[in-house]
Image (tube, rainbow over all chains, first blue to last red; front, side, top):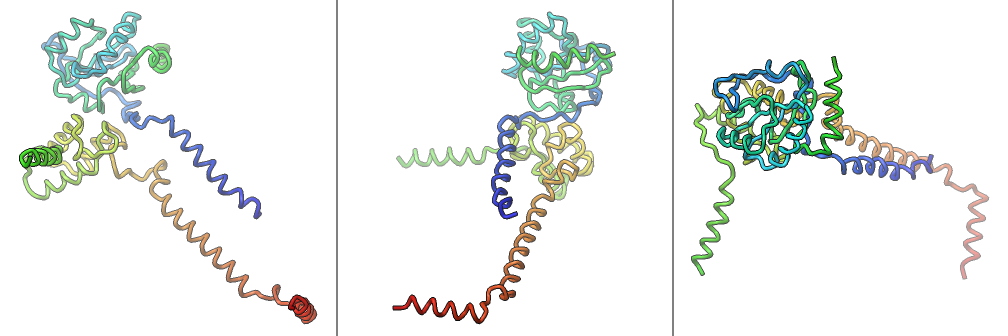
Length: 177
Length: 156
């Protein structure tokens, strides 16, 4: 009994060490989204390239897609843009939410850097962004064909992120009936 | 010299005063007070360890505006907090709700305190029992004589 008691500090140390070691690899800036498993919030916003054309949450249904929140003031979005272009070329469905942006600047950006988005939602006031719980662009939601949010990725999608994290999830949604 | 000193001081002060200031017109003191508690109790999703009252991040400004709008609409504090939690998750609350995952957080410290007192009482009681049970430590008559003779021998 006494012997066992002597081992107690070592046991406590090991438990604490395991937790601290795990903590080294956690990213506190990555928040779990409150919207996983919920449909994309209702919205009715114009398209970036056509003010007359109103887009709603129903337009996102039909195919699994990435919903990418971006803006021209967002430096990281510029890094991400070529990757999205490449994905769009491979046939990945990507919709864009132009978040709290100047529309003329957004149009210029899409003309100059190519437009990977099938739908360009113009969220000038940031209302859709707020409903989506966006706290910093770029953010990307993975939605299934019923328009339900299945996954959220915060930060720049590069080739590695796509290959290791998002591609399998996207493929799973495509394979879903 | 004096002038540059004053200028430096002025600069330092202006930095301190620069923290986010919005100019909202509240209907009364009570509403201002509610706005203050809400923005101080809610956490800025972008900046991790700041509440939305202190943060200068654009998202914090948006959320302050949103909270003000909801206060104007006459929504209750719970409604406003629920609205934000629905979008940003429990992360935005500096006062997390009691759920299964936060039980340890809420009651862990109290449980540790109770445990500590328990160990303390156990130790004290055991010591007292040893003190009040001297039987094992007393020597028999024969042993005492032997001890005395041993000690005597040692003396010069």
